[in-house]
Picture 1 (cartoon, one colour):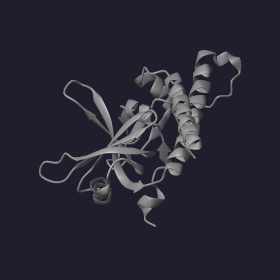
Picture 2 (picture 1 turned 45 degrees about the vertical axis):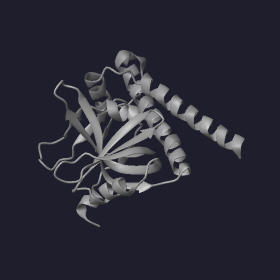
Picture 3 (picture 1 turned 90 degrees about the vertical axis):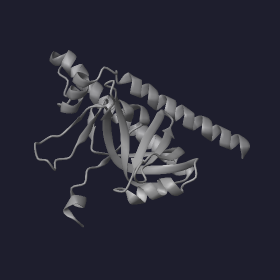
Length: 212
């Protein structure tokens, strides 16, 4: 196993709505090889993410060489995935897969500022795999749990800031602090997204049972 594999960052599970709001990126050292992190609005950092959704559209948007864009939808929104010559296996999967199809993706967040100052967030895949609906369903449940964990930690930290004399033992949370400084989106929005995702999953399961 290589050193890079030994030190590879954990891939965070994150819904599209939060991923697309993660517009602030940073490094934690001046080393040019230091990892680049996206700041999640729920108070964590992500160098890599793990997402699962429905690949609804693919397009070769390259000019001089192939550069594939994929549109991947989860219950809360859309991930845009880009793969070219430096991600040959992922680009090949986008080229060869006929939408719609369930896919799982491990990749890195990338931000791009448009001429009008809008920051768009996309995903540069390390790997893309075709999966089944059961895998997608498990991802929705696990991502809901991870998101709620982050929200709970954020809210505990926030309560401590507002009432430090209350005797709370909430731990220091530097990423929650950064998120509150950088973003104006209340974390309750992401709690609502979790509820929406789980309700949508229940609706799909109910439909499946009704047609079985």
